[in-house]
Image 1 (tube, helix red, strand yellow):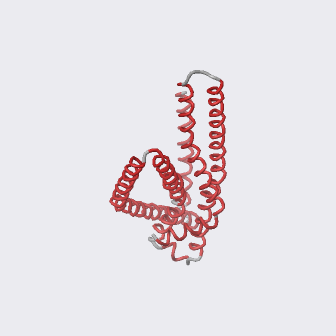
Image 2: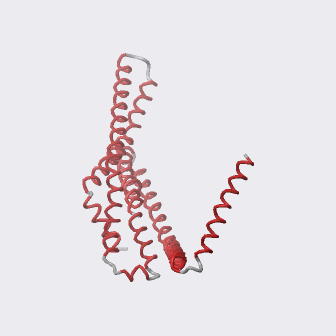
Image 3: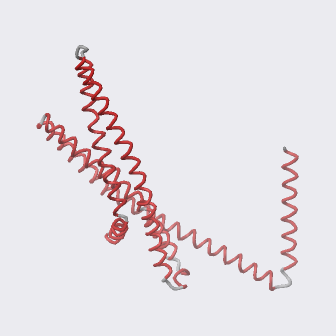
Length: 252
């Protein structure tokens, strides 16, 4: 596990510009999104007052503020889209190249081993898991940290006691999710191990099938006694296809 995250950290360090851009875009988007209700509250208070020039000016100023906020949110999400593509796609590409370089250094006998299929499948899972892990960190962990921090600040300025109750609820929720994740981890590991075993069986069957095809092909080319049989099989195959098309056209 430490080696996996160490390799992921190397990739993120190589893509640190796009990673920082994504974090900046998410922080701006969440901050602006949580600021919008303040303007909605000011607009509601202005509509509740009697109409006057001052009230109209207040409403227009708040509408302008909302326009700026949602423009900033739109720009932040577009900036995030620009950053997330080279971060996820480029990271997976780098990990696949590293796995390929490791496999390329292996001897030919390594790929005849029945455990090689499991290792190849694990390498594929290792590279493909980078995208969901980075997305979880950005869109779940980092995003929620920013949202909780800003919400706690707003609540503390209005009602400090409620802000501490809110923080306690957040800690209880996080503790419950951590406990559940630790309990569920053993089942995820079992599923991953079973998936690797299935991959080994599939690759072994594929190798056996290819070997049999190659054996039959060499035998058909080298043995004069099998050549008439192969011609007969090809003839029956072509007759079968023509019969199938005739039935199809008659049915249509």
